[in-house]
Length: 215
Ligand code: AP5
Ligand code: MG
Image: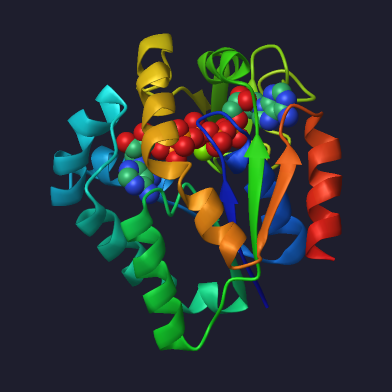
């Protein structure tokens, strides 16, 4: 069983790589962003609280996020190992995760940081679209489906774009990353489990580097 965190700014490639590792290693991707978008679409209480905050590019309050993850991580499919994508994002979330895992007798094996220049991120995020069925992530110029309008992973033919993927919101998401999430890098470095990879490399070569880390 392997438990890992993918850490990096908006557009770093966390979702893209998580989907690949999920298939290859039988791990489960836990994306708090995907969970929140599902809650917004379903109109739940959490969704109502999160919608405007996400559209502004700010972080949703820790208590909402921690409750969401605590419930998800208890489900049986996660027992074979997880890839956290977009969580934790604050020191309070990282501490809550440590507490949850300790309680369950589990531990984190790796925290993989994807480093990408700020200018590249805005371009990546504004060209992004994803499969409406399985969530696989694509890009107008960098990563189109092999067959036009057909998802490489599941064969679906419908795609969607995110409400927060515009240049202005991306800048706000980036500044939230630098102010609130980047401090987690020294936190995990101190635990000896942080690996930093060049997120500017080709998608395939980043997957190769991750596979080396996972062994
Ligand atoms: P979330 O959904 O987590 O978004 P994010 O962190 O902003 O990250 P993205 O999903 O935009 O980027 P990614 O790293 O997954 O990149 P991707 O692989 O798609 O969060 C959204 C919002 O929800 C937050 O702003 C916040 O409001 C709220 N939220 C979520 N979690 C929270 C938490 N824990 N606490 C509080 N609030 C929370 O790739 C991007 C694009 O680039 C794609 O088009 C892809 O094809 C392309 N690409 C990927 N890799 C490469 C490469 N190597 N080269 C070229 N192109 C590439
Ligand atoms: Mg993502």
